[in-house]
Amino acid sequence: MRIKTKLTLGVGLLFLLIIILSLLSTFYIYSIKKDTQNILKANYETLEYSRNMLLALDKMNINKQQYISVFEKNLTKQLGNITETGEDKATYELRDNFRYLKTGNANDSLKAVMHQNIFEIMKLNMDAIKLKSDVAKKTSEKANMWIIIIGTFCFLIAFNLLINLPNNIANPIKELTASIKEIANKNYSERVHFLNHNEYGDLARSFNTMAQKLEEYHSSNLSKLLFEKKRLETLINTMSDPIIGLDQQGLVLFVNDEALKIIGLKQQEIIGKNVSVLAQSNDLIKTLLEHSQNLHKATPIKIFADGKESYFEKERLNITITPTGEDKTIAIGDVIILRNITIFKELDFAKTNFIATVSHELKTPIASIKMSLQLLEKEANITEEQKQLIEGIKEDSQRLLKITGELLEMSKLETGNIQLNIEKSNPNQIVNYASEAVKVQAEQKHIKLVFNIEESLPNVKADSEKTSWVLINFLTNGIRYSPENSQITLKVTKEDSYVVFKVIDTGKGIDSRYLNKIFDKYFQIPGSHKSGTGLGLAISKEFIEAQSGVIGLESQLGLGSCFYFKLPIV
Image (cartoon, rainbow, N blue to C red; front, side, top):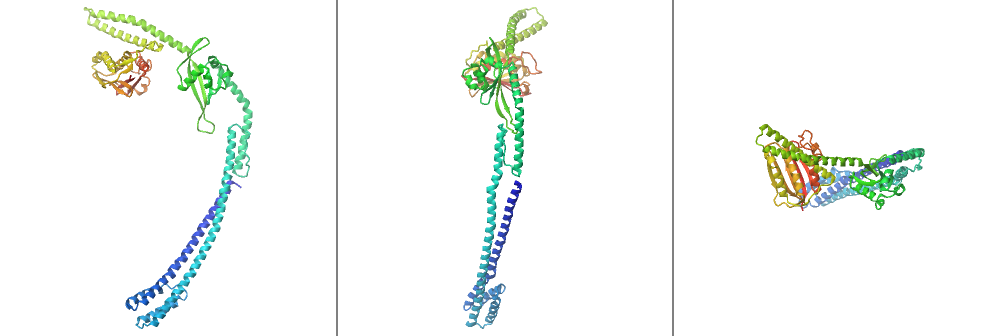
C-alpha cells in the first residue's frame, strides 16, 4: 500500500471518528440539558407555586384580603403550568374550592380540602421529578457508554499511528541518508534494501540504479583521473616559479622542482609533511610561513640560491570550492607561489642609481647658474628686459634644483641610505620653522596664514628637519593651489597618543577618485598644473611612516583640502 494511501486512511478514519464523537457528545449534552430544563420549568416551578399557596392559605386568618390575592396570583400561574397526568383535575378542584372560599364561606374543612388538593399537586410533580431524573441519568449513562466506545476507537487508531507512522516514515529516510553519505564518501557499492511497493520503494530503486551507474562511471574514469593528475603534476613542475601546495591541515601536497631548488630539500623529505614541522628545521620555509600568516601578498623576499641572490614576491592563494549540491564554500588548502622578480629588482636598482647620479651631476651646474644669476643681478647697466630674462632663468633654475633635490631624496629612500635623526622635538619649533620658510611665498599671493595651535603641546618623537620639510611641502602645495587673497589654516592639536599637524586650504579640492593615489610616486592629478615631479607627497609619506607616524588627506571637490600627519608623543 502506498504511504499516501496509508496516511489518508489512517488520518481520515481518525478524523471521521472525531466528528462522530463530537456530534454524539453534542446530541447527548443537548438531551440532558433538555431533560433538566423540563424538570426546572414543568415541576420545580409548580412546587414553588404550591408552596406559596400553602403559606398564603395558612396566613389568611391574619390578613384575609392580602393573602387571598397572593393565593390567587400563584393559582393563576399554576393553571398555566399543568404538565403532568392527573395534575389538571387536582388543580381545577383547587380552583373551584378557592372560588367558594372567596365568597366568604370559609371554614376549616374547606381549607383542609384545599390543603389536600395542593399536596396532591406537589406529589404528582415530585413523582415526575424523580421519573425525569431517572430518564436524564439513563441518557447520561448512555452518552458515557457511546463516548467511551468511540473515544477508545480514536485512542487505538491514534496510538497505532503514533507508534507505526513515524517509524514507517523516518526509518527509510534514515537508511537513505546513511547511504547517501556513503556515496558522498565515494563508497559507490552502497545500496538500500527497503523495496516495498510504495514511494520509498520507488526511491530506493532509483537510488540503487544511480549508485550502480556511479560505480561504473568511477571505475571507467579512474584511469583518466590518474592521467589528469599526472599531467597536472607535470605542468606544475615545468613552471618557472616555485610553487608549494598545502591542504587545510598544513600538510604539503605538492612542490615543484623550482621550489625544491631554493628550499634545499628532496621531494620525499617534504611531501606529506606538516609545514609547521618543516619550518622548525628550514629557515626559508619558516620565513614563507611567517609571511603567509601576516600578509596575503608579502613583501619581496631575498633568497641566495644557485650561487646568486634572487628576489621573490610571495603570494598565498586560499583555495575554496563549493561542493556539488551545496551553497556554502569550504576551504581545501592553500597554494604558495614565489614569483621571481630578480630582473625587475635589478632594473629598479639601475633606475635608482641612474636617477641619483644624474641628479647629483645636475645639482652642481644648477648651483653655478644660480650664483652667476646673483652676479648678473648686481650689475647696474642692465635693461628691464634683461632683468625679466634673469628672473625667468632664476625661477627655472630654482625649480630644477628642487626637482633634483626630490629625486636625490627619493633615491636615498629607495636605497636605504637616508638617515633619520629621531629625537624629542618641540611641535611649536617645527611649526615656526615651516611657517617662516613659506612666509614670503604666501605674501606674494596675498594668502593669510592662520595658526590654530593648541597650548601646552607635548614633545613628539621625530626628526625635526624631515618633519619640517613635510610641513613645508604641505604649506607650499596649499599656497600653490589656493586662490589669491584666500586663507590657509595650520592646526596643531593633541589626539590620544599623537600630535596632529593639519594644513587646511581653500583650493579647488581633489576628486575622490584620486584620493588613494595622491601619495604614490610620480602621481599628479590629471588636468593640474604640472610644475614638479610628483615626488613631494611620496617622500613626505616615507618620512612620516619612518617615524612611526600616520599621514593622510581629507578633501572634497570644490571645498578645499586638509593634509595631515600624526606623530607619536614622547
